[in-house]
Every structure is written in structure tokens, then in C-alpha cells.
Figure 1 (tube, rainbow, N blue to C red):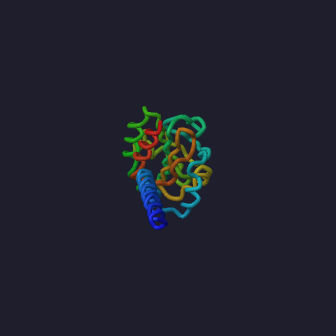
Figure 2: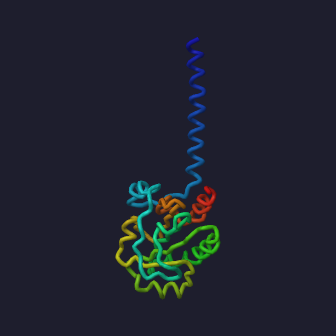
Figure 3: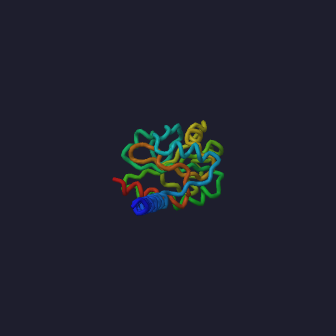
Length: 183
């Protein structure tokens, strides 16, 4: 009897473990992929917490806003630089995403790095950036978000929490879609 009892206990236990592993894998597969970063552990600790304030100036294509002003909206922060080739290359796609989701409560904001910020207005005009951009002239926003490469994308959920920090650029639309589905 004892062997049968133990055998029966092992089967549900094994099934439960497989089910939990499957559920975790599906959830992990749905989330945007985190980028490799020297500060990945710190970024992971920030996720799910209230998003840091924005300390930005020289807003173009929109009025100055704070994260607290945007509660109820999904916010995509694109940390970029005027001298960054991949950042410039991503502008048309960012414009497309911004247009596609703006009527669904998604706000796209370009956070221009301190170095090269004096060329931000020229870059916006030359490369036809349509979404709001602002300069991090004192470096406080980049530091608060621990952005350490460009472009870096961060998403703030409707509650004002930093949901994903520095995730794969190719997953921006995936992240937006996941948050839109949460209602």
C-alpha cells in the first residue's frame, strides 16, 4: 500500500511541476525580451515600481508632461541621442508606432540624451520626428532610469509603474499590445 500511495503522490506532483513550468514559460515568452545591460539587476528591481519623474526641457511636438500627468495612459520612453545612428534609423518606425496607437491611449516620448541635445530641434526637423521629444539637459532622467545605451526603450503602464525597462527594440509594439490587452 505504501508504495502505491507514494507513487500516486509523485504523479500529481510531477504533473503540477510540468504545468507550472509550462505556465511560466508561456508568460515569459509573452513578455518583451530584456536587453543585456551592465545594470540589468537594477533595472529588473525597478520594474513594477512607480516610474521615476521626468526632468526634461525644450519640449518639441508636445507640452511638458510628468509621468503623474499620464496615469491612465501607456507611455513609451525612447532614450535616444542625436549622434546615434540606430536611433536615427528607428525614427520612421517610432513615428508609425506613435501614430498607430495614439488613439488607444499610448503616448510615445523621445528622451534626448544630454550629449548632442543642442542639435535636438534640428534633428526633429530633419528626420521628421512626429512624437513629443524633450532634452535631458542635466542627465537626471537618464540617470533615474539607468539608461546606458541608445536607443533604450522603457514602458510605463496605466498605473504609472515602470513595467519594462530597457527591453529589445524589436519588442516595442509587442509590449504595447500586451498592456492594451490588460484593460
